[in-house]
Amino acid sequence: MSSSTPEQNQDQNLEPKQEPDQDQEPKPETNQAVKEEEKAEETEKKKEEPKEETKEAKKAETKETKIEETKEAKKEENKPKDEPKGEPKETWRDSIYNPRTGEFMGRTARSWGLILLFYFVFYAFLAGMFCLTMWVMLQTLDENIPTYQDRVPSPGLVIRPHAADISFNRSDPANYNQYTQHLHNFLQNYNDSVQERNDLCLVGEYTDQDAEPVKKVCQFKRSLLHQCSGLSDSSFGYAEGKPCIIIKMNRVIGLKPEGDPLINCTAKRNSQLKIRYFPSEGRLDKMFFPYYGKNTHADYVQPLVAVQLLLSKEDLNVEQTVECRVEGSNLRNNDERDKALGRVTFRVLVSE
Image (cartoon, rainbow, N blue to C red; front, side):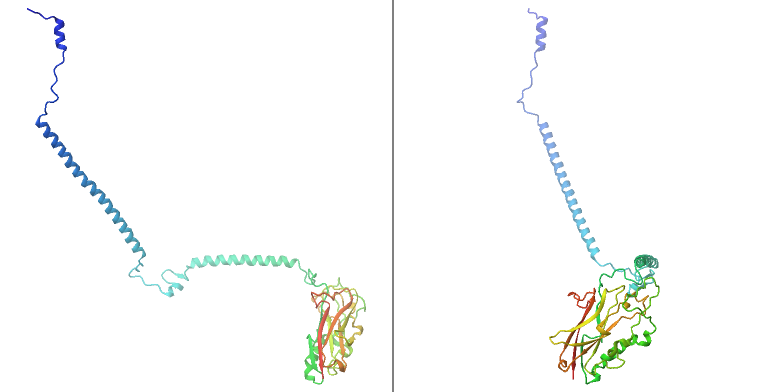
């Protein structure tokens, strides 16, 4: 009899059991269960797909509805708003005074009060500034003497009658009456009766009165013009064809001409024109200078020089151009930019 040892029994127990054959076919029950699970998954997928499609459709619909709502809102905004029923319509009278709001010309009483107060204060400030600047400027000015006199260093000359062209017919008094009447009116302040109220001054001397509050006036009587005074001949020589022209120098405050100023006239033609002067030699006496202004020298009269043109028969019906200048002093008379400075030119035409 054969007997087995314990080591052999252990080797037998350690041998692996035989595995079932892999090529053995599965049972039919398991196949059916797998197919049913696949069908269930497919049905679930089909159910989930329409749900997703419905969600996307809903989102698209909401977007479309929102777009339509915004379009309708814009249309409603553009539409004119209907006036609420029951409220009266506004008229043009309401733009002047609105009884519902109490507004006048579009503003309430408080608004009008504030704006009027603002403009009152604003214009009061401007007026105050203007008055202040004017007051400061007036403090720098003298009532009697201009602060600056550099533009009038020398006076100009003027003539009477006031006409640059003197034309008349000596045989027709109505033709030259306008000139003689002008001279009579001009010489009223030089009448002897008026000038006798003034003072007799030293001939050939300046009448300085800087310290005197009221300035005296030197006499210049009309009778000093002799034949051109209009006293002995009321026509001033126009009836004889020998007209008188009166020349005066413009007033300049503080002017004291040096030398011995006089008026000299010449004819601008080849032949010599005879001229007579009153006072003699056409002198302007120094005693009438200086002039202190119309406030302190109210009755002041300028010295005059009368020029009588002694026209001959050959000079009749011929226009005479005469130029008169102030000479014999430092006064300017040849400035080409200002032809009225220290000189004057006029034309005379006497016909028969």
